[in-house]
Amino acid sequence: APNVARGSAEKLLKLTHKLRETNDPTAQSLASSLSTRQLLRICRRLSHYPDESLHHAIHKACLSRFLPNLAKSALHKNLLDAEIESRPADIQETEGKDFSCEIKSGVLRIGSVQIPVYNPYESMKVPDVLFYENPQHMTVMEDMLKDFLLGEHLLLVGNQGVGKNKIVDRFLQLLNRPREYLQLHRDTTVQSLTLQPSVKEGLIVYEDSPLVKAVKKGHILMIDEADKAPTNVTCILKTLVESGEMILSDGRRIVSDPAAADGRKNVIVIHPDFRMIVLANRPGFPFLGNDFFGTLGDIFSCHAVDNPKPNSELAMLRQYGPDVPDSVLQKLVATFGELRSLADQGIINYPYSTREVVNIVKHLQKFPTEGLANVVRNVFDFDSYNKEMREILIRTLHKHGIPIGAKPDNIQMAKE
Image (cartoon, rainbow, N blue to C red; front, side, top):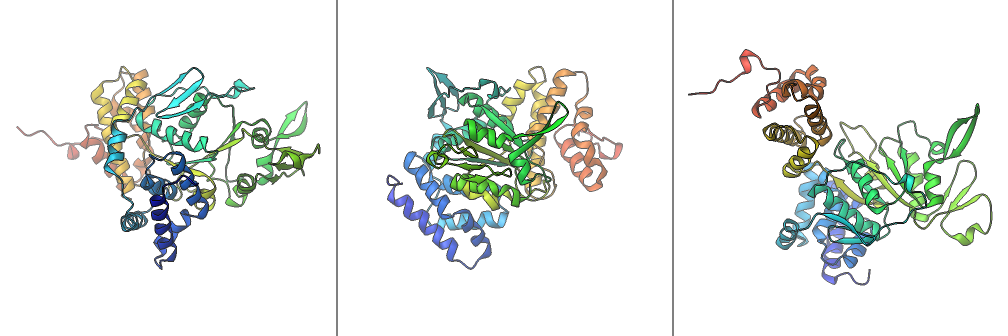
């Protein structure tokens, strides 16, 4: 990355070497996120986008949104020591930024980044999704497009229900790129990643999996629930991304160099348009997946996806439920915002997501006569078996004016 600012590169190296040489195990765990490959990725991005903040790039590489509090404060302290701070200009720029997207004369613009719209051979496989734009999701998509233009494979990490699938589908819809979809689970094997059994005319036939089809045709391979599969299985993706080579379970071989194929039947050449977008939940409780980011994170360009901020979420809910009273939507946004904050503090286990609020609003839109207290039970009834959890939920819901589980002893009358 010859065009990267010298000052930024020196600060980045100073921070990395300090983290690597320290005896503090927390800081050492951060150093593994800043591998040489990640440093090159950061520098390449800074050289192509000089206005990009180094502070933001490091937080993105370390996936700081999902770090434990101790590691997060260690990262913050080391960034201050290395004189890498968030500039006031960056905050002002974000506030006054255009978060829209448009397609004009065959060119897609997301925020300030542009790319020609793809002309696919199989337009049937281009996703078509209902998506209500909001500033937070558009910022993630703009960030994704920057990395996509640099030729990176992408990894989106976030809690369940924050809209990772929706964001990727909308992203590919705007780009007009065909998608191959592969969902992993804990019984996924290396063979099932590369071959797919199906029944034709009463016989079991083994066909190419979505992974092999995407490699052949130059489609985008979307791998969902990547953290659920054992890491010894997902590690075969590492060879494909790193070296562009992979041996399939039926003896065929994927290679990146067309000269290596040389007319051989059992060799598949990677299409130049092939790209991988991987979705995973954050590691640890309550999602009980493997630490995909810790194992394979540095071969992908990582993006943390979070629930939209209150204003963005409210604007989105208004579009899902145009006839639902605004006061009800505000109650829901405030309630779920507080519950997520309690989950971040470790007081409750499950981080209630946008998906749950959207489902409540869709229900209220379709059945307006049903009471709010009754509808929210669809989301919270499962937690009512845990007495302590039930009390926290009831207290939070009552605080924001949702009368679920109301009894004579927990109703507070207004004072004159």
